[in-house]
Length: 539
Image (cartoon, rainbow, N blue to C red):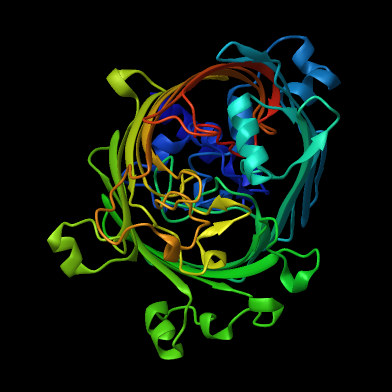
């Protein structure tokens, strides 16, 4: 009944929403409001390509329509201030050929964290703005800027101090003398619909390929990057060309010995084919090459939008890094979908048959399931997935040409040399959202001066072994992460929420070494947040 009512209201209100060909930011909490409708057998949405374009999902999700459906009826909500808090944009211009909204973005959180008897009071102080709009019926734009100061739980602080970046949110600088970090993030895109078949998007942001919580092909767990994306939609096929520039910000890795970061480039193809109402197949390939000494630039050989890159690599005698993969989803019923991925970096079939753990068999896979309206309860969704990545996946003999950006993987935040089980229970009821996460992972960590294949920023030429290379090699480390979150959606148009959560993380190495010791962390937080982009702290 919930689906029927929501679809009816949204279809009636679709023509009122002039802004719907803007891209919807990648956000799992927001996504959970309508993903059950996207996985209906009648849905024509290619669910493995994110962010979604609002014209593609307008029949199942429309912010204006959802806002009308959930409108509070209190006296305060009808005042000017009440409308701005609960149901309106701060500034809105809506003309025949021009649409513009401007909204504040905020994340004010305060918490308590304890790790092995050591306590601190983590906080986040984020201020910014979000601007979205359309010019005519074909051109849209969006931009966001955030200024942040935060004090993190100790395990996140150790990651930041080691990698110089806040996970997925850019470079970190020390702030005052309290261990706090200062960091900023800008995000924005412009989009042009050349026709009903072609869309061109130029932006500085993130993309995601896959149906799961994680992606082994391309994830949004890393930092923003500049890109040009061309999307072609024909029949039951959606085809994406993604050209992007990445950066290596490790100390001592500078271009031309100046302050500029070393650049590298990626070109990716992804073809999504809805074979029928139940089965969707996706085919992925990517190439990464280094801008050596700042002289190579963007290699025009990789501008070809349709040809496979492996033959180009071979014909050029290229040392570049190529990755291929596949995504699949299958709708068992309107309430249950299965999904998975396979990624191949290098592999030798003969060595796989020998089962001797040859190092160059670099591959990974994912298998997951989603179940909507579980046990007949509207809005109760379940998800569980398993991810596996062999050692040295995403690495390269030239460490600057790995599949990474800003000291993080472009795919899974663990990098390589791991397996992981992660599950979710999510419940949405009107403006309330509840989420429970259960994660267990086994990783193989490096010891000082060693390379067991977990750190994708180490050259695979520095590997320790040729054979006997298996997941967990190195310091075998178990990670348990549990999280409970609750939020109340104040304003569907801006995704402003009151939030509270508690998380528990236990890191248990088989052998304790420097910076890798048995630790348990408890983290409690409450706050007010404009929840726009995903933040991944479950590592």
